[in-house]
Image (cartoon, rainbow over all chains, first blue to last red; front, side):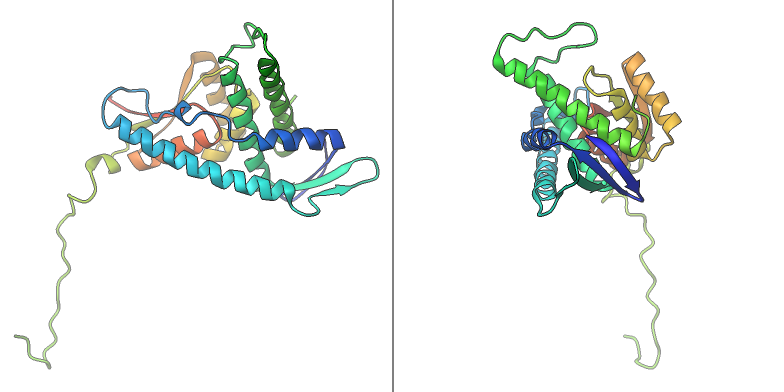
Length: 157
Length: 104
């Protein structure tokens, strides 16, 4: 996937059919982070149980909204146009923010499924097919995140 | 009773409303903290700080590096409502953010 052009808040990307397929499969996995992962505070005491329930409810409805938005976005008619050598797809800045949130959810959710390893210090030992799939999803989500970040921020190396 | 030809001015109630809004709501004593984790990409965290707080890249990077090197960074000090808002926004992006009462 490469950035072809950026005009105003519109970004046109080129990607292969394989990249499109992988991206759609990844996005379809959303949401993957357990709601209990989010905490409002780390300080004990207060109305923590009530606050936690409210937080999880709010997060759940935001996720449903984002899921709908991204599904409509990616499966809309004429979303992907056939170019000369690859597919062309255009997103606005806001749409890229939605995609970043979803992709990062998939990355973090995969990491949680792998047992929250610190890959900089030690790579996870993947013994099952499920682990291998989680690791692949984590890395693929990061790949697409970097592509989008490079497009909008231009400083990913 | 007031006479129709003689208009009456009713003064507004100027008493302070102290019951409906708890003191905490207006007290800018809540810290929004972002915690380190080994999964979120550094460039992603910088991006999120820029989007959520409207910070320039340099400031966002400074806080991102503080999270990375020291385990956490205090991003802002706000009222209860604003702190909750920022925590929710950061969590929407998958960052580990919490709000803590500033005891100092």
